[in-house]
Length: 501
Image (cartoon, rainbow, N blue to C red; front, side, top):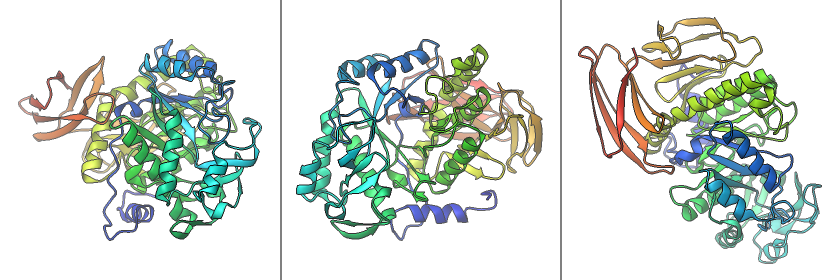
């Protein structure tokens, strides 16, 4: 399935996943906070205060940047009662403050479910403390009928009911302490029937889902304006379709893949389908979540693909303190992984600017996605091809329009050129369009990387003014034949120019 030949499939998926409307234009995704475009780490093996700190420290001590951590389930006394489990997290605010002191933002896992008759072995408390109140107030779907979901048996909040949503917000407020800047909004609703009974009548499960994700997006933006975010499924094989609305999803995370080559290829397909559906910021689960733990080669290739998406999300159940950690595979893997993460961080201004543009005018970060060749444009001016097998021997075709410069070698190729090359583990296909400007951040400074073409160009970029959604505009004008450029910014922050020749 290729998207090079037109946007019909993209348009159809976007309309299918959006609210019913006469407007068939692409959705306008939200601006993702700049911090959420970095590396987010997590583990789902020990799930304790000590293991969370150990994980973050492991990266930072090796000078591998971390912007956020997910506290995954189970962290509460029961699903989802919003009371920290003192056995696992004895002093949660101390942990949150520790992360804040290292500029690491915290996301908490949740679903819209509350358990009653049973629970899973990781969370032995049977009944959520808020279960009876939710049922007695009529705040749940299916008239309070219980269903089995993957963490036990219980009920799901009716997010079509405004009173139920406000009650839920009060529950979430119990843990919305300083340091918590969002939630991993996981699914549970798909286990409550193909159709569900709600306050506004019978809805298909597909119709019901976005009410839940929209409500959580609105919550974090109200409680953490400019800084809050949700991590949730965009298009996913689980549920065979879209979950949240594209215009109310901070970072898309398809979720639950195996750590081997088959998992990487399957996740790539889900990420690309999400981009086709109009989701602006799609991230990648580095190394998968379950099943096989990634080998050294698989982890690195996963990370290289992830670096060319919105966010690198490394963690899971399949070896969070072994296969997921680059240094576990040896010093060479650690150094390669560090370089990949640093490359991604240097591109955050470009990624952020592209997402602001999508927010203002419609569009996505991942463009011209090609499922057959496993390639895409990151924004309008960077092209990459994923490596999804052991050999590193790949063939791919560059985009037809313009000329393309190899990011690493500086070699220039005409558009449409077929490249056949063996890539070592420390390299992967990355090309920049000739006649473009790429905003970067290096050593804390903004840099505009000019790759000149034959014609003058003028471009405006939306650069992050901090860790949140605030930004300032910079306009650069380039006269390549005279080798002159001029930049004008709505900020006193220093911005330097660099010629890529």
